[in-house]
Image 1: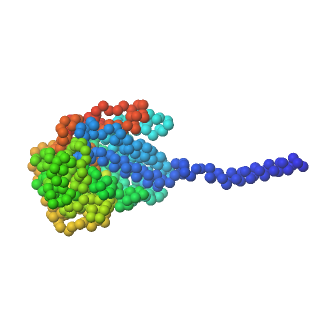
Image 2: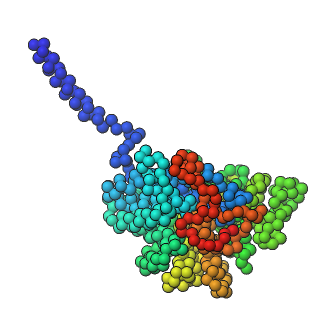
Image 3: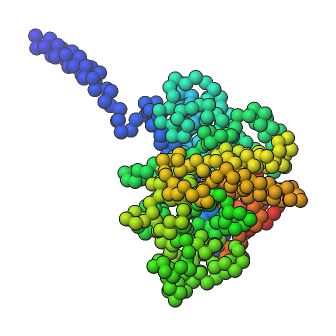
Length: 560
């Protein structure tokens, strides 16, 4: 009898345990550490896009200093940037963009979320191109093995480029498929597979033009893309990241807005004198985009009635650069163009003076700062300061104007059959239209209706005719290419990556300002590897010089 009770009890216990196990088993998966298969692809996509945005900002902000959009402090190229300068960019590429994309792509394809997968492939491919463009040979094929290989070796830059192009082809195939669901949080194209496919093909054009010096089939590849015709050609197709005016938890404003308008300390960044000289004084007319691009906190630095203007004794000691002379234009005060456009010359590594409320800063395009209508007010957050549009600017990652300028270069040098001058003019037109429409596009009311400040149809036509005349008067393809690349350079305000690549590939513009002190050393053909790579990878070998060229650069010219 006792044995029977024990058996019954034991049987009941097994039933109860099985029942409890059945009820509790779903809770054995830690919700704070979900498996990839259980993850939401939209959440992966959100994380990927935000990290890609941060990667782009890091890369562009370094490159724009080398090409004189902003100021490279230098004083030489060798010591302008150390390995730690690239740690954040490197981490964003490998730990965020690549890792997230590699996890997300097979998961999205398994769930038939093909648009999600294609987006990840495009963002990864762009990052791959940029890592090669900046550093040359970098880890790739062994970089995602985790604990299986903690010391990945580098791959050849040419192989990584080929893999990125193949990835773009895979993305185009994915965009052509019917997805089970559209992305709920596509921050670039609102879930449009068509626009993403157009971008992927345009990035192939970028890659083919970038490698044209080392690929004798580049002309054929470019011609095929032109025949297909599916390239970014309108502002509606532009590849941009848009910010908001939200200023806390998190601050989602454009970085160049936050750095210069976000406090009462005044402007932080130093803009490049060369770039502002190109806008204001290089041609016989001012570039109509100037008041959209650049905001002057002070309109006349010699006006001693302005309380912000230091007296000459104070200025001499606090801002000694004021008394130097600059070659842009000859005899003008160093640091200042036209007596009011206040920046710094290339390679100036002097300490920052008390000029935060005086120097020129980012305008309404693309950072959503202030349009310059001679307000003569300093930027900041307090009453009486200029606050601009509020920071809901953009990152101009790839614009239709860039496509036209590449087509102009291809027509001139690869014989694609298009008219290079017409393509260049289309690039100027696309840029002018983009900039002119930008304030209204972000809900910003211009502070003036005076057409002397605005981009008008007349000024666009006059500027385009002037550039066409310069092009027509050029006597060699090299001179004509110089005209094309200068206009590309001016249209790429806010994007340092493309001018940096273009300069190494073409040596244009050919009148870049030399470093302030001279003897700046070899141009940065590729950057030092990040310290987080060379310090923790036993197979990493740091570069000894900055003149190591990337694989696509066979340009023999000495760069400034």
